[in-house]
Image (cartoon, rainbow, N blue to C red; front, side, top):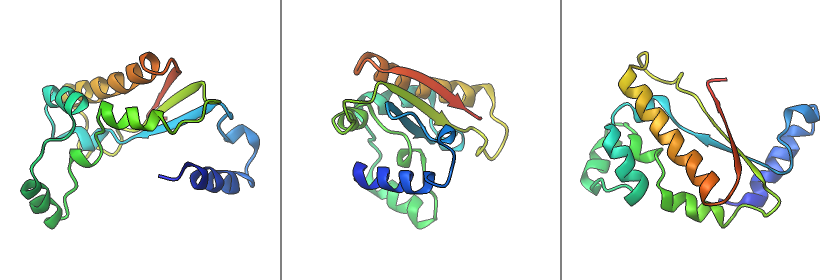
Length: 142
């Protein structure tokens, strides 16, 4: 991940848009893949992945990738991942906006899947608030 290159792309694309459409300079936008990506994982597994990382064996991954299936392990990141991300965030950042959409679900989300999405969102939100002291806002489904 090259933050400088990413910022160049955002600024170049944003040059043709009004400044109201661009994030503030002290704002970090984090896109979370939620919705369908969390439909095949149990609620207790979300906490395990958050705390310990992904522990799916290589054979399972190869079998699923061979079938053109990307599973939740491809999208669900751990606390360790976000700890590494913190080191790359410029000191000028003071706020974080977590964005995501449950619209990608193949079927309407049941209460079970809503709970899974809410649990993961809360873990990420708490991390940025408690570990780094950021003000965190959620923008989900809008």
